[in-house]
Figure 1 (cartoon, one colour):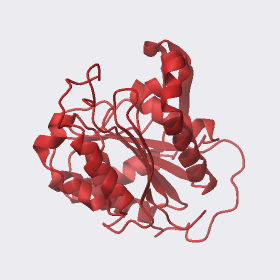
Figure 2 (cartoon, one colour):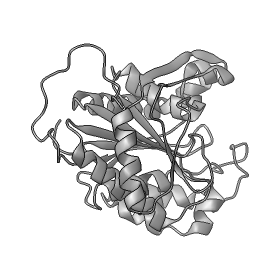
Figure 3 (cartoon, helix red, strand yellow):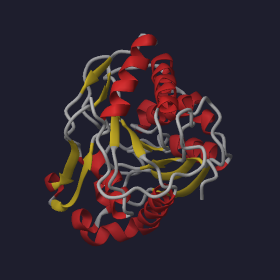
Figure 4 (cartoon, one colour):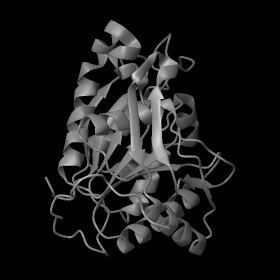
Length: 287
């Protein structure tokens, strides 16, 4: 099966970009259509700092000149106990359901990464499926920042199982790490996810005064440069908050062999009712 290719000439490769290269820079972006004025109108100004941080992170990832992009999204189509990757077609979608069809992405799927990941996952008894490449609105909202920054290359969106635990997430991450080591070029990564959805009355989730404790603990873990602390947040608090960012980050931490560098929170806001965290998860020194 032939991997999809980025249109146009490629820039010169960075050092450490041949087979055997580790996962490159990685970040956390919220999947938040409400950040776009086309969706929220004037209310989007309440989250200007979040949108600015998303654009800065996207520019940083694109400036590292990756050959492919791996996106771990809790919002992408799920099925049973399997992790999903697309092997054919286009990773495409828009925010039409939110009244903003002009906010759209249309990217080539990375067949090579998908096929390699399936083989590596099978060796680790991790179930996978070839999911349809169409994108949900929340994944589009995150990816649109990358497209705005100039990204047009091969893109793999990993979906999570309907129910999963730490062991399965780590095994999937290790399979991705093994796959990246076999591919030529560099791989950048993005975890998509949001914090507390119960910040205040009128939030997307049912308001609960203790739910915002999740955002405080998640924010401190990222500020302290220790994203592994996210994985120790108790399940009841995570469920109370309605968060979606821990599982995608868990996959990427395993893909980084538990050794991220330069982790730092770059923005946190909750003015639109949801905790929006933006962070550099791994700085590989290319910027």
